[in-house]
Image (cartoon, rainbow, N blue to C red):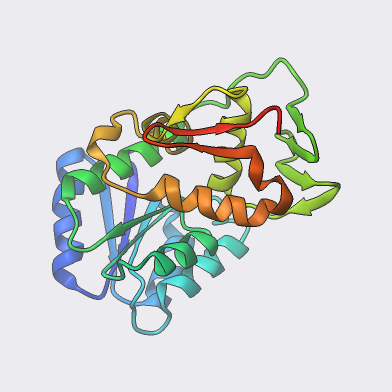
Length: 233
């Protein structure tokens, strides 16, 4: 079956623009103009990805995101926020409540399609085989991939799915530097990162460092290149 994209926006022109480009990709596209309708469609239709505006009548996008993440049936549903709010604080709040990505209006349809395609590709990919228990220890920091759990000095750290994936990618690299493009590929699935103009990686790294507390020093910025895990810190 064709993948289903749910577009939630009270601007009809935006819904139709995304629908036009979704149709060109062979995707099925649903539209909702307010918060309650978005929740009903998400639960009834089980779309493959939701494109979610922040400013909506009935319920705003942040509350919709929270409710979808709390419901086990939709907890892993990929959500891309699409909004006119361009400030970093708005991006951070959106990512904090569980959005997978954030696209600012006015947006490039080509970029949005690339992001949707990446989400669909990752959702369809089989889980990577593992030949180890999946526990990575780095000083006071421990990452347990099997249990999707991170602790610092024995205390649990609550991470979003993308923050967890970012930390896992850096630890797997064993101290090697990963560029933003490599991280977009490995964590977000953007095979052609040149299509993506985003500070998504930087925002996630910032939030991850804040949550890791004393272990934040393990994530090192390599100016002009990307990020690496400091295996000796």
